[in-house]
Image (cartoon, each protein chain N blue to C red):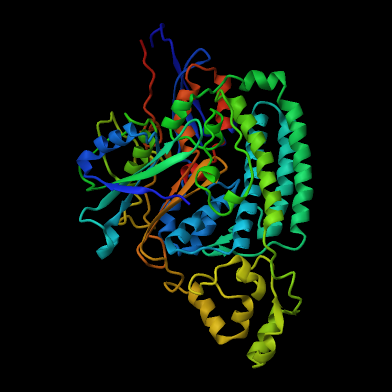
Amino acid sequence: MMNSQTRRVGAAEVFEALQTLKHEGYNVLMDLTAIDWSAAGAQAPGARRFEVVYRLAKIDPDTGNDNGRVEVRCFVNDSSAELRSAARLWPIADWLEREVWDMFGIRFADRPGIKRLLLYESFEGHPLCKDYPIAKRQPLIGPAAGEPANNPSFNSAAPTVKYE
Amino acid sequence: MSRDRRTYMLNMGPQHPAMHGVIRLLLELEGERIVSTEVEIGYLHRAFEKHAESETWNNVVPWTDRLNYVSPLINNSGYCLAVEKLAGITIPERGQYLRVISSEISRVADHLTCVGASAMELGAFTVFLYLIKAREYLYQLIDELTGARVTTSYTRVGGVKADMPEGFPDNVRAAFQLVREAVADCDKLLTKNRIFMDRVDGTGVISRADALAFGITGPFLRSTGVPYDVRRAHPYLVYDRLDFEVPVGSKGDNFDRYLCRMAEIEQSMRIVEQCFAQIPAGKHSLEASEMKDAFVYQDMGKQGETALLKKYKAKVDQTLQGGQRGERADILTGDRTMVMPAKEDTYGSIEGLMNHFETVMWTWGIKVPPGEAYVAVEGGNGELGFHIVSTGSDRPYRVRCRPPCLNPMAALPQLLKGGWIADIVATFGSVNMIAGELDR
């Protein structure tokens, strides 16, 4: 069964910690997710609201062995972009950070922009936050709500075409 | 608009059939060459992770069926293993073998679907029909075992809900014979087929380094030559006792991914056959006690004839959770706070009835000690991870599912860049995108 070590770092040092681990041979960012501790009461491990978890693996490309796993954990608040994006280290961090932003509203610094991954741009709130009620309704969007067809909520992918 | 425009946009999906109705690609094209791609996902988002927080521990299992709905049994096992790791439960050996058997049958079904569907999208409709017919034999086995074809919900925290029916190993061997024939036929139809090769050989290439940087696992990673398989790297259940190979490719193109999946079908069937040779005998075939219909049994209990009840077993459906007295101990942990009592106890004694209610009553159900656990299993597409957080209540505080097909989807723009529009179908098919797990 899989076991991993845990390393706790401050939000400001996350990027450096990840970079060091990458140099130590942790070549795969397996997962990046967050936990909202605001409803855990006395069981919350820290005073800050969110805990972000980076899950790294050391996979040998020749033998396929996994030579160890490490979880890098840090606490953040939701308001400011405290974490530096890991997309420079692993390209998959781009999508995983988008999901964390989408679901928890945690911002990341040092990346060009962030877009929701699973939900649409005009979605109100971040659903995996504990203060988001599970039965909450979202406003109607789209042409049926009288919005014009070029509304970003249903045409959110920014055109990447460059006209010369 | 200026006349010297070089590139144009094309919207592919979500309604395009090759996009399975759930993926939108925004393509920037120069003629038929792809300059850049933007992938939009989320069309099948069902709030699995949010919903899991409001369900009891066992009630999350049916939701895991809907993650990768082509191999739901692997999801069932993965989720329950994570909860069991946190609760410190080890399940009986027979239950572990049953989880492996069901997972591997599911993996064969998953690979058959992927190969069949992607071949169909490239025009090989015969292959699709052959392989879906083969999958049908496996679905019938799954139906026999779990009572459902797709929404299996087979595992419970602490074991599996029912033992296999009588004659199941023979049915599996017969079905595998038919699957092997279908796979051999499709191998003849595809592997040296010029039309197929032109579409898949050398398209959608990804390097080893890129595959690892994108965190890709499963057949997609193995096609680049990295033999990483969770069953090998972190053996769970009884995989360390089973002999199987991890097929790898070399070029990391669509053809290698096809070959990897075809080879893995055979390996999974070998695993199941070994399991039947190794699985410890269940009690239900040894103890010949008299069967009573469940309602007769219940009436005897109500009339106070409880002394006689020990002689009989209640005749209940094979797939009903709790099951019968003897076989239950082979497949479920003995911890009474974690699993339902046997149906004989529920029907025949007040203690059993109370025990039964305690496992299902609101806020009374099973409780998992506070803490966190991450368990990964080898899903159809790679490392399927469940990260579970408990605060000690009867329901999870947080459930995170690491979907294995998210990573190749994120790498898709890189795979498509510089290729032709026609390659999109071949490359996207080889990702085996399952929106249920991608969008959760």
